[in-house]
Image 1 (cartoon, rainbow, N blue to C red):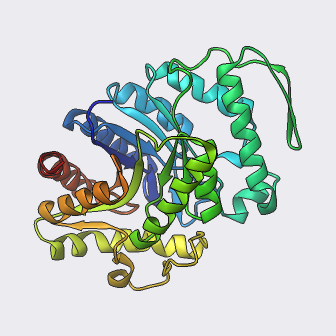
Image 2 (tube, helix red, strand yellow; image 1 turned 45 degrees about the vertical axis):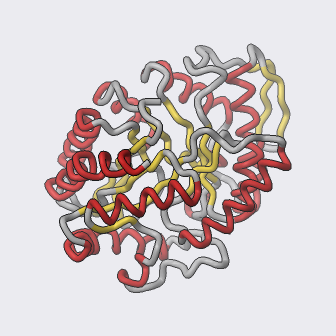
Length: 340
């Protein structure tokens, strides 16, 4: 790790329908190189299929490109929809990415929640948790054993091998993204850490953190040394300016999440609200001083020490995204680190 508290940048590679995707790609690569120069610690690529109304460049090829553009940064799959794949496919692709990156890949995984994706990959919503668990067990074994024989309802490994192995030992970190309570418990049992998602209200996260700690205790595991949280972040000179500048793009993103029926805990107020109400305590929006205090509060309240920040959304001008990425590095980083 490069510091006790790490800052990551989410790069979606996402564009509005009809937007010039080649231009957006170049802007995305510019942002990755900028993050590397400014001292960010990681870059995260998100993933969805059939992402209408957005165009979405896919995760694995983009992470491979990022290894060349930002050789210093850790690279996070945030998150791979694990039930859609076979374990041998994921193990070999991410071992390759770990070699390409010099041992800096993070495998972030989640269940997924969209029927359009499940149906397209020949599975059902009811199968996803069982497939997720079997796949994750298979991947760990393939990364750490020479030959693996394993029979599951959805695949069979018959003396299968993953070569080369990842550079990281015993294997790359496995972050499990989880919103629902059973998924949080699964993250404690099967993951290296819970990758706390961007949209859940902090009051709900507080309740789920107790659930997570109990599940760790039940599994005989310590609290993780690295606890990542993804948040939507936008910084400007004043909170009013920050809301005015990001609302058209961030608001559209969460309208899409609402239309996609993203799953949330029962005690969360949900995404079907006007933007000002939606902000609540989900997002980190304001001046550098205000956002720094919110980040420090997350660290004190939950133990978060790797903040994965979404700062740009489909349709946002590249110049605006660049301004906030620079302001975060130049003004937010030092405030947070001074306050630790």
